[in-house]
Image (cartoon, rainbow, N blue to C red):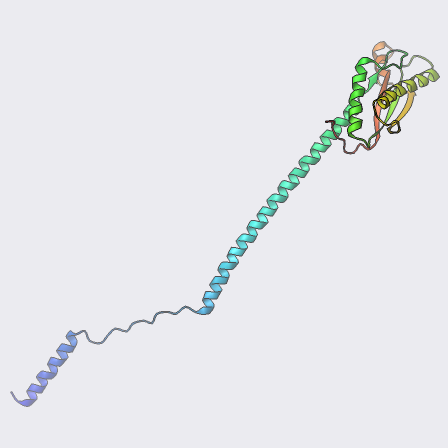
Length: 208
């Protein structure tokens, strides 16, 4: 074999060995590096989301508290109104008298005792007591009798500690019958004292 042939064979061998070793190395993609601005933006978005959730929770809690307070206030006002109406009805309960009498009857003394408790629990309340009669007797006589009946109730209240200045009296005689009729059933209901609040009755307390 001549020299030229040997060089060719050697070159081929080198080429074969190079191919067997895998050839050129593969190109590796560069590792991405996070942008500082992007990190900051993501952190701000996260913090904003947390703060928005916190504010929403606070708002809902405030709305719940306001709703509860409104309901409590409504319930309280309703309770006060119910109490006021009940006490006003108790204070307005009438008492009655026997024919041609201005003497308090036993069953009516208990009614006046209830009024005393109410007046003690509500010191700003002032009342008017109106005396009434049935249709028998003259106008003048019945006006005087109605006055005695109103005074009898007032004196009982005053004797049990209620200031006299809180109580007015008035007589209507036979002018304002409660029941129309000309028999004892009607007359017995017309012989009465009526009680009216004239001041201080907006928010009444129930006696303890």
